[in-house]
Image (tube, rainbow, N blue to C red; front, side):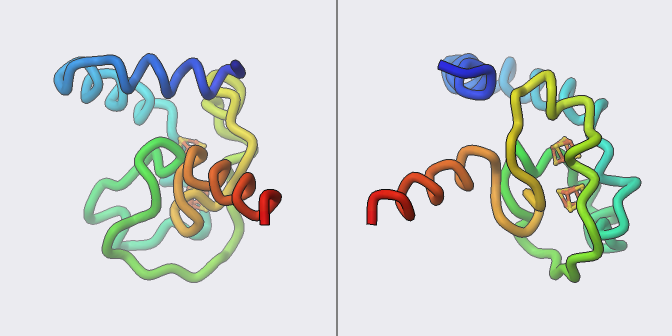
Length: 103
Ligand code: SF4
Ligand code: SF4
């Protein structure tokens, strides 16, 4: 099991309150707000940590670059993808890759 899988399992095993606290802690390290793709809609809704929470539910995007590769959480959580706000969470992107390989 890799670092991200361990993190996901830990998160899934927590009560809602603890999970919320843990996600809030990760948000403190998210650098999305400094990204060229991060727009007013995302800022207004204070959206962060797409890598964990998945793509933005309501905002529309224009790809202008992704700074996830320089985010401190990349190392801490063992992230390997990017453009989470558009493509979905790390977990979703991993599942998608596996499905593609299997077909
Ligand atoms: S990896 Fe990207 S989406 Fe995840 S916390 Fe860092 S900047 Fe935000
Ligand atoms: S997920 Fe990547 S592209 Fe989207 S706002 Fe965060 S850093 Fe930018």
